[in-house]
Length: 447
Image (cartoon, rainbow, N blue to C red; front, top):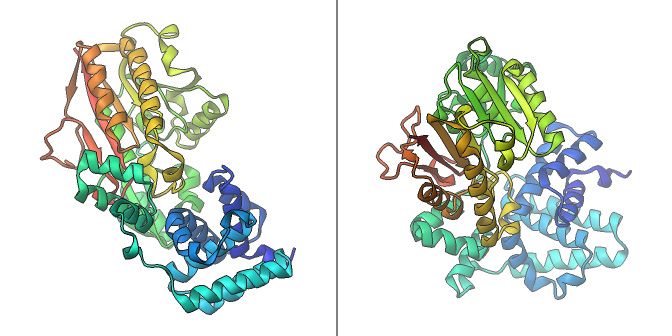
């Protein structure tokens, strides 16, 4: 393959063309990185371009529109090539415009015919001469917000209706900032001090999380490639996600149900709090055999396999396998739209509609209704999602409580007393609060 065919810019174009056809960005990137020998700098550039173009797609398409008369007649890779050029030119300060244009034209020349090279060259030079269209010229306020922040108008409207204009703008502006590299210390085998020392010895920069007492935020390197990760001293987990298990408050001898467990991040966090000698065990469910296997592998890596029972079962059928009152604690980390994860999974913003949240609400309620009888009197059930819309959060809890007078809503605790002055008993973490994932946590006690 030619040098151009191995360059991070060409690989980014290839990945983006496939992602537009429904492939997941993280899977597509991992596949390319595994197939090509690239140094760390090239991997970083490839990742940056792919995520950057997805993140800013509506903005980039708005800028490109005046210069391409019939965008739908372009080969998909040519369209993505032009978007990658725009992204690098406008957002990557350290790469000179000349270098961006030259490599873009070279890719067009090697991968296309002479007509494509001439077309790409003409578009780039025309954009450079004319300048890019100004957002301020967009008269409709919501369309201007949508193009500026590359967010769908339905989500802008929904967040404004639920949270007000100021909070909505703050959230959508924050979602295009880079995701932090967060990890959770595995208290079954290590502590914050030891993990910090191990990572600093590997020349990573480590800071304590302001959200989670067992969380660390890492930069200047990849924690996932370290020996400490391989040994299971920590796992990669967003800071917000680390709040769920402490809210559930499992005790050492508890029987716990993790109803929607894969890939097992929260399962292993529960398991770290349990003592198998005292009868502590977590039953971790998923409906897919391959994901059940993944839970088991994660439990083994984190040295807690002796207290994890990974089980292939639909949580809505839990009553067929377990008696009423069997569990001391139940976690329902429910399937959701994932809109709180847009910073690390940018394509979500274009794939979801409000109807998805309403459909998921029915599944979320069905799971809560199914598992509720298996909780002991006096036991706690924690419900969590990684979304920021009330349809999947507060509305689900309101409907559940209306149908289950034997449950009370109790205030969601956090060890760092986050949002201690809030009026609601539930806890909503928005992406702009701490620059972590958006999350919702509610705690229910059975009377």
